[in-house]
Length: 258
Ligand SMILES: C[S@@+](CC[C@H](N)C(=O)[O-])C[C@H]1O[C@@H](n2cnc3c(N)ncnc32)[C@H](O)[C@@H]1O
Image (cartoon, rainbow, N blue to C red):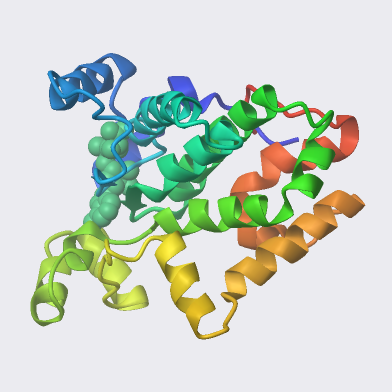
């Protein structure tokens, strides 16, 4: 059995990772203070779709998750006020589509995605009355396929040093840290494209009558989940501890991450 850790309370993983990655996670109290400072005196700040957030070294999501939560709550209120159909789905989609988060470490990215996905899915499930998670996914199949793709697209592995630099200086920037230079050697320059969210990308493909490969994979993966087996999970590893227990008891595990 895998070791169970609670990501919500974890502030560091090991001395080695602190040394190699500078990995110390920000405690909730300081995140709350920071988010209070940036939004102070700004009405409708959290439900403004024109505002996007970028977390250049997101770790396992101690800053990303509170942003997503605040945005979700604010978009939900806005959605209800505007009488939008399924305001919880609108709120989840908009919270995701207005955040960018990267980290150089694969495990951190997976955990960050997992926490965000768990939160959004839980909120949606708790608001809706579809009876069970299977029914909810079945009844909103395309929506959940997009949700999976969007989590992957908006929160991904990248090097903050080179991805924010132009092509000419990207290599030089990546050499500033050992992690950065190691990452660049394997992955090359992958510039951040803030004007191309998952929704933008999907629409661009759609205009050309194309379907993104990840969208097809997400659909197939959800079909498999609904049919009771976990094939295709490697593409959506962040769902492992959330969707697979559904097979057994048809309930979302709300706490505890293996
Ligand atoms: C101090 S932790 C902060 C994590 C998170 N922002 C928080 O406040 O909890 C630093 C993070 O930076 C990541 N990191 C280190 N070098 C990086 C790089 N070149 N590009 C992107 N992320 C990097 C590490 O993996 C680690 O998760």
